[in-house]
Length: 494
Length: 116
Image (cartoon, rainbow over all chains, first blue to last red; front, side, top):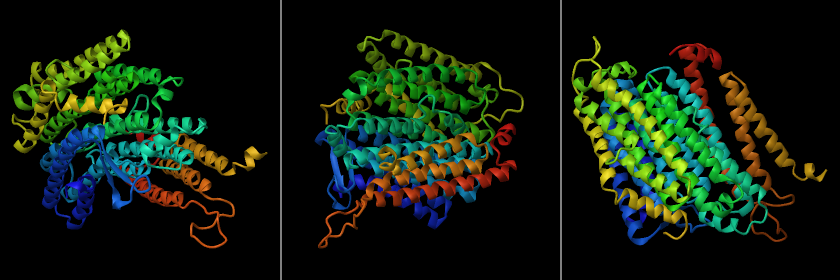
């Protein structure tokens, strides 16, 4: 049994989805989803601890040995991302029950749960697989489920948002598969490790460079790399609350993982970072994302859109580490996957509670007024998560920015450190707008009566808020895992 | 001449790729955008399939008198990719139907004009 953990990680949610559709019962769907999410979390933690003690795990699907068969491979990096995805899932699944009741028609709930399980299976599959084409299939499983989840939002704009995301996402996936096709033509293998080995002996560089370009743009679309982020704000803003929380914490992060895997695991980093100016390109795009998206967030009136724009900016921090490509920078990048996932997850989960109290109406800046009196715990949670977004010491956000600044200084680029601090100040400004509305403005007449979100939802939300602080103080898992992963990427770790 | 004739598959692939992408970006009709998407995806099928075929190659079965065979793996991969493409297209069409029900139009600019 323990030998089959890598397969179970993906198969469990994949089997749960059709089961939920067959049974078509709301309660069963919720129970099954929650059970699967928790089981996935246990499996991912077991895998992570086995990787930490015994090195990478290789699992041959159907006993077809790699590189001929499909290999599932868990190493320090994928174990870290697996924990992030299943951790978020296990917070969002129990919370979904009450949140959906306010936002989606009851007879459609089972569809949401089925899609949620499929999405989870897809995201875990992307992370665990060691096969480039299998990765594409999982990418599409996760994406198709996401488009459906977004389209289930209450407002009709959700449909347009889902459609636009579907177009851009499919172009992204198609570009990725074109890139993989070119690599396959050059190497004759689809196993990522094998491909990396054979690429070293390929003399013809041009197809490989074309593959690099296609994969970068394709995955860039999926991870909302500036300026390919247009789909993100609408998709996050109009999706149901639980969907936004789950997507914001996992979907773009898993795409970053794919990019890291290809940049450091398949292509030759010395060629990549030498004559190609990949470093400069990534740094420029990241800086543009950090500044412009934060400025847009500063003037946004819809609170969900505000935090969606903030996500675009935070992805800029993550890709900045890829541009730095040194130990500290990559550690910052990878640990920010987790820290930002937890922070944004907490914020969107709290906003879901607000939407529930406001009977599903969009949460605007004006609607936040006087929240400190009406929903003190929710308001407090929002402030703590907001501080983590800014990167105040003692919160998770601080840790990642610390490593990113260290990485920038090690490269001798002190101006980048200044940009990181500057973007954080803009973040402080938009978080302050929220704080001001919540605590300093009186509640408008006709605001919903005082009262917190249902306790089940509040528990999930506060759990994630506590994680924001926990990962800011106790960093042995987060930074430790990220450091191992960065070592692995730069060669020399396991 | 050999640049064109020898790489015919690639030229067709590139043409389909660019045509599909152009259609996807330049059209405002949601259905025509999906047609563009389908053409873009078809170009990928060709990209994989064409190099897998060897002229004079047989199916990969061991038999006397045949030494050259076509690689079957790209076909299998593209079978999967076609399934994915069909699913994407079905979902896209379903979304267009829902958008038409909600907005009464499938022209992008008319939809974006309508508030909320």
